[in-house]
Every structure is written in structure tokens, then in C-alpha cells.
Length: 610
Image (cartoon, rainbow, N blue to C red; front, side, top):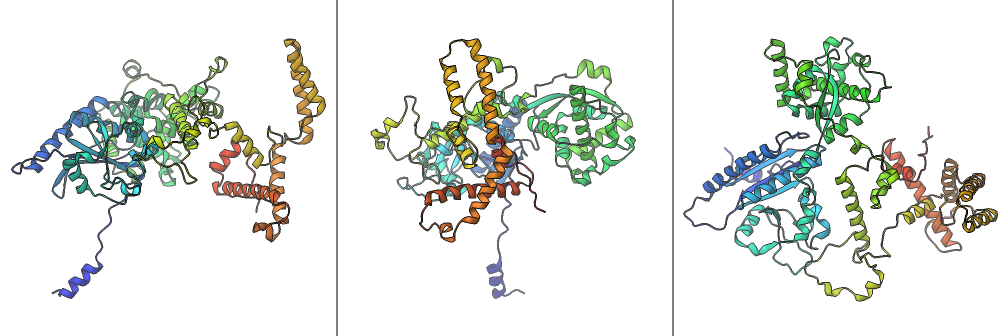
């Protein structure tokens, strides 16, 4: 029998099991029924359960209405009634994978529920915590730091409500609240809420295009697939997501069934192919199309020639999808998924004759033939650069597509606007922009600052100049810039330019400009400016040699002649060193260093070390 000492020792060593962390690609949501204080004789728990069941039914109706044909990237929205510490609530967790739009679709559905049920309060969190505050970070009061934000952010009657601290006159707040305290404040202290239109608009900005955005999250494409794949997708279009994911995260074990030399060993072999319209999530379609995947031996002879690009693209994408289904049904890692069990039952029905494969006539006459434009997948640097500047295509350039879709363009311009707002914020320090202080006044603004602000409200000194930034980066890299670092054009060419400026004959001007361009190119080639490979090697070589020449005192920043030159050399050395280290860390993949070199039209140097 355990003694009191044993029990005391056990208690001293006992540690509660920590709650599992929320995955990076998942969202948790909670719905509570929190009416105003009720008479003591009312059974609040029973009433709450009844009201939450009504909310659950409303959510099911809303999902059926809005998301009848919607395809989730990984998991669907769902609510279950739970009882924790005597408090009933509706809770759900959805793993949305790489599709961020699925997360915001859930927020939209939850907010719509609060319009219909005015006595419910909703929380949503992901791995970032109160992610609605992340969206509205630039508009938040100074005290609202992540350390004290838990359980303060709620959605009620379609609006965002934030619980204020008690000591609201202090700038630094350390008061944290738990869930039970938040419930008490909601029910008994309605004056403790921040009701800010600006914060709410920023937090819900991604919902501005809903419910129209729901259909824009999907993409339909015509693919050449095995007839059995067409049969399964016609039975349930949602099977596309696990099949694409199986293809996208494949490993050598998953690829094993595809290595067979006999096509009859495959469930979805290339013997019987049909053209059908397949509906994807946009993320899923991009994952399927963008991956390099050599055709297995059983498929290589079935793909059409690459001369017919459209037919080949349909066949290649169909081959990838069929391989995804093959891996999904064979890989032991996926066997416990409900979708896999359902598909196996349907295939068994085909074998027994309870189900029949669709005929060509049925597919041609009854099935959808929708095929959406794929231009949203095309990313061109020039288009991206133009969108960041807020520019539009000229009439001559409008033959191609814009960068991304309208939503992507709007988001890019919004990011740039936020960056400019940060640069224009006089209160922003080197650690970042300060948050808005709810308790400060606009009267504190100095009138003298108005001289530096243009008529459209932009701070001229802090305005982001992309050309100037590019010039500075090229100078730091040792490249020629427009401001004088490059070898000067000869006096003869400058005189030639002046003659062109004074000329009035447009026809002659065109010929003279072309001749001038050829002369300038020949002269610049002689200086080696246009040889970017040689230029870059010289920059790195100069940086290395200058590093070797530095004395210990100059390394430590001790004074002496030529301090300014040494500072410039330090910048170039450190920049070259950091770039090379960053490129080495990328290991041949994409990264910020490689992207910056590409933007500056510089080739990535090879790693010749043995």
C-alpha cells in the first residue's frame, strides 16, 4: 500500500501531458453560445446544447448551399458538439494543406453563421495563433502583442470583437486571459470590446470577394485519362485531391507499382483512354502540372508526339493523374483513408458487374466539357514588375495575359502599398513599424512635416523608388549603373546624341538612332561592361584580393588614412561573401540570393570546389 510519502513523491514528479501543437497547415475553430446572464433556474448547459445543435444544422445547410460542388484540398469543414469542463461548444479542425483559400473559406462560413445566430461567439486560430490579428497587424493598438492576444479575438454578429485590457492607459500590457475569463467578459462586460472598422476591414480583407471567390478557387481541365479514373471522378469529384496529393508527395516506395513492365498489372493502365473534363483545386492543378515526372515504361509509348502541344499536355497530365491514383490505392500509407476504401469498393462493383464503365457516347453527350484558362499559372517577371509598380499594359502588349488573376494583382499592389506606408511612417524604427496607439491623438503631429508630403499624401523622401534601388544594388555588386559607375561614353558619341536631339527629320532620326546604338554597343563591348560573367568574376576577385590586403587594424575599424575606401570595400566584400554563402545554402534550389541575381540579370556562379 502506498504511503503518504510515496504519494507526495509521485505528485512532485508528475507533469501533465502537453497538448499537441496545431500543425502548420490546419485551422481550429470554436463556436460558443454565450447569451446575457440568465435567471438561476434556467439550465444553461441544456439550453446551450440545444442552440448549438441548431447552429450545427444551419452550418450543414449553408455548406450544402454554398459548397455543393466544392473540392477541398485535404479535409472538409466539419463541426462536432463537445463538452469540456461542463461547457458545451461546437469545434472543428480542418487540415487545408497548401490551399490557404480553404482556410479563409472556413472563416467566411463561420462569419456567415454569426449573422443568422446572433448569440454565438466564434474563435479561429491556426499555427500563427490569432491569425486574424496578423492580417490586421498594421492597424492594431500598440498594447496588442502576440503574448497577450490569446482568447481576445472573437467573431460576433459578423463583426470582429477584441477584448481590451483593464489597464488601458498603459502602453505595455502583460495581462493574459484564459478562455473562462473571456467568457465572463463577453457576458458581463460588454464595454471591454474594441469595435474598429479599420481593424475589421483589414482582418476580413481576404473575404471581400466571397462568395464569388469560391468558384475561383477551382480549375477545370480536359485530360486524357484511363476510363476507370473517369468513372471514379464522375462518382465523386473529391477523389481528385487525395490522388493529386499521392502523386505530389510520392516516394520510392509509392513508385514501386509503377515499375512493372506489364501494363495489365496496373489498375489504371493506359490501354483504355478517354478525354474528360476534370475539376481540381487550383493548388492541386498547379501541383500536378508543375512537377517533372518521367513517364513509366508502361506509359511512355502511349503519349502522343510533343509536336501537338495541346494533345501532349492533356495526355501527360492524364498520365500523372493516373499514376497518382495507382500510388494512392497501392501505397500502405494511404490505406486507412476513407476515400481509398470507397474507391476500392467501387472498383469491386465494377469487377462484379454491379457498376459499369461509362461509354464514349455517355461521356460525349452527358458529361461536362468545361476547360478553364490556364493563364493564371503563367508568371512573367516583366508582368510582375509592372504590377508592383501599379502599371497597366499598353494596347500593343495586351495580346498576352496579365500577371496572375485579378485577386493576385490586387494583393500585390496592396503589399506594395503597405510597404510604402511603412516607409512613410515617421514613427517606424529599425525594428519595424510601430502599431497604432489608440490612446494617442492626431494633434501631436507636427505641422512642419507637411512640407515633405506631396499633394496625394505621400512622403516624397520615403517613397519607394524601384529604379534607384536597382541602381544601388548594381553598384554594390560592382556592376555598371546609369549614374556614372560605368565607363563614360566617348565625347564623339555625346556630340552625336546632341545632333539627334536638334534634328527634326523623324525618318532620318530613326536611322541615326540605330547607327548610334551600334556605335555605343561596339564601344561598350570594348570596355568589357557587357560581359556580365567576366564582370561578376572580377567583382568577387576584387573582393577577395582586397580582403587579403586589409590590415588587422582596418579589420577592427581602427582609424587611418582611407577609412572611407575601406568602408566601401567592406560592403563589397561582405556582400559577395554573403551572396556566395546564400547560394551555397540553396544547394541548387530556389532562394532569395538566386532570385536577386536573376532580377539583376546575373548568372549564378558555379561551385567549382572539389
